[in-house]
Length: 435
Image (cartoon, rainbow, N blue to C red):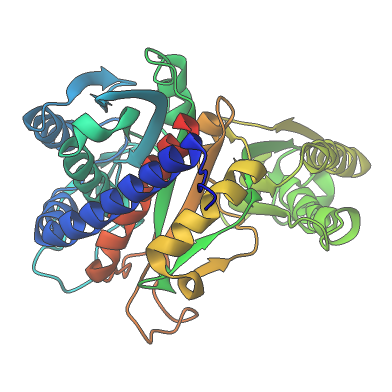
């Protein structure tokens, strides 16, 4: 009778696989058990929102929670940022997980017992403050992930770095902040991060679903400012003027031809939007100047260059044709790179998302022309940024209140899926690197 020979590495591989499956069962059970705590954290953050670089109460709660879990904590990074470092009991890679903390200057209209009543000063005006983009849920989910993974510390094959970031929506005027500043202050070093994962809740994706895209998933963005200078005159005598309002109108209209006539939209979408136009002080006075501000979105370096050059040319040459001048600043105050999901990493980790949510619940999505400063981390290491469903089951994605609006609403029953997804991505990546 022949002896059966099985290579030793196969036993090792099977053992590691079994251990990883057992770990995922632990993750699922612990995440479910934490659901009420996660929801409570989210509701507390929602009721007490803070604007970018002002997340003092928020960051203190997060730091206290991480410290209670035995996680090494760093505070005050990029103003109010918090970083927790959890070193596992086994050697392996460093996996970073990120959540953003800031709210928006929006007055809440949703009738909830934990609705925000907070008001504060923003750019010299009194404003309401609301978590109208879901960052409250991101923080609560990552706090849950920290609790789950810290309970498995001795079996972790590497280190987890929990990044709680301020000012994702942009720092206040005259200040620095967000992911760019976190990176500059060394958040991806000591220990050096190998890979990063992040999620964003989506109020127009059904709860229980995860949506993703390899490659360019969210747009690169630059803001712009155009100042048109003409010659003032009485509104009754326009022939004495060089009217910057008429010139600005022509510029705005012509800018729309950049996307419709210069960008191959079958390959990548793009956007040119003017959102602010200011000029004049009285109905019968033609002003001397008009100032416009807007945003451009793109998915490739080539499209970024094309749009930038065309904005400058259209503005300056149109103004010149009317006898005026135009000064173009692009970017004006901020620029985010494309949020680019590493293609090889996405392919490698897709089975993890499918196993966590169910293959039928993990959906490929088109590019999103919104922007995310998670992209600054992805410039340093491979990363994946995916979307988590937050719309009630059976809801209409078209009519569901969108992000950044007073009626923004989330179904909290999907939060534990976010916890499980981030935990399992961490465990599977560590297991893969450890083989």
